[in-house]
Image (cartoon, rainbow, N blue to C red):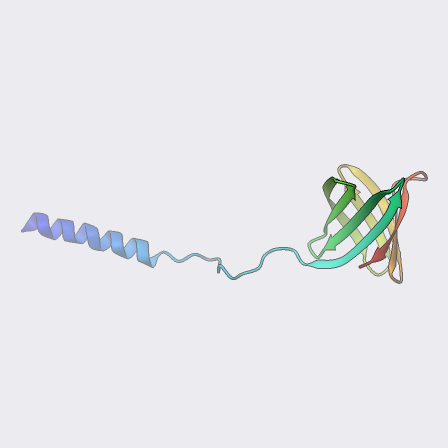
Length: 120
C-alpha cells in the first residue's frame, strides 16, 4: 500500500509540475520589428531588370534587397537618425549617409556610390 501511495504521489507531482508550468511569452505576441519606411529603385540595364529595395524597421535595423535578372541578394544592416530628414545606414561594415526629401531618399556610400530611391 505504501508503494502504491508513493507511486501515486510521484505521478501527482509530475502532473502538477507539467501542467502548472506557464510560459511568459504568448504565442500571439508579435515581437518582430515593424516596417517604418520602404524605398525602391527599379531600372533596366542592357535589357536586364534591376531592382533595389531598402527597408527601415522600428528597431533601427534595415534590409537592402537587390535583384538583377535571376540573381538576388539581401544585406542586413542598421540605421540611426531620422526617417523624416536623414541619418546614417550601415550594411556589411560599410556606413553611408541618407537624406530624405518628400518621397525620395538619397543614400551615399561615397562620391562614386550614390543612389536615389522612391518611397513604395
